[in-house]
Image 1: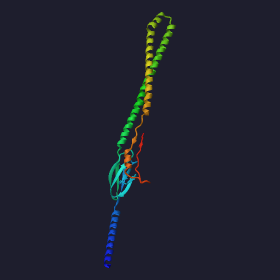
Image 2 (image 1 turned 180 degrees about the vertical axis):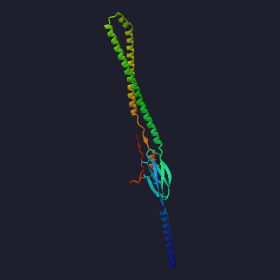
Image 3 (image 1 turned 90 degrees about the vertical axis):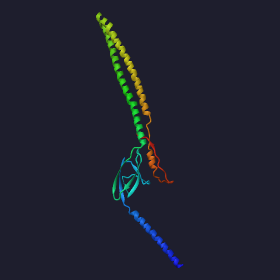
Image 4 (image 1 turned 120 degrees about the vertical axis):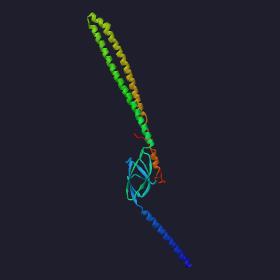
Length: 250
């Protein structure tokens, strides 16, 4: 019985020694790894974030990591996510240049916004230019109408003051009918130009009001929702995923 007890103790001691050796070997391999630094040069450089190794959400320009490959997911507002694997070289600082492309949703939003601005320009500038032109035409028509009216008044004064039969005959047969016709033409042109000006002014007012009331497009950053869903945010009731927002950008 004493011999069996000694053998049992020896087996326990051998197992303990093997376990201790394995622990020391694992610790030696872990602590023996070198580290390196990644210097991140990201466009845009003021608002990007990244998720490191699918666990850590960060916003750093330099990260010091163990040597070897590491997964990165980069994102910035209005940009698409970029997944990549970066290798850390031991005892070295490596510059990494990454450009985040604009997201399809943002590109569609910018096209809609440009279209809105174009429509607003067409709805404001062009009618205003037409109204300005018709206004100049109406002012010119009024000037011609006024000159023709003053000419008739001068003819009437000359007819009243003239004492020469020949001069009166010429005035009645030639000058006065011609000036009366010019007055009628100028009056008609003034009425037409004035009416066109009032109509164009009313249309311009309506067009400007319509253009200003057209709703602006909204931008829904779906890439933001995807990015925030990569990392679980701990909370009092176990955790939650961040929500995205639909915001207007002007």
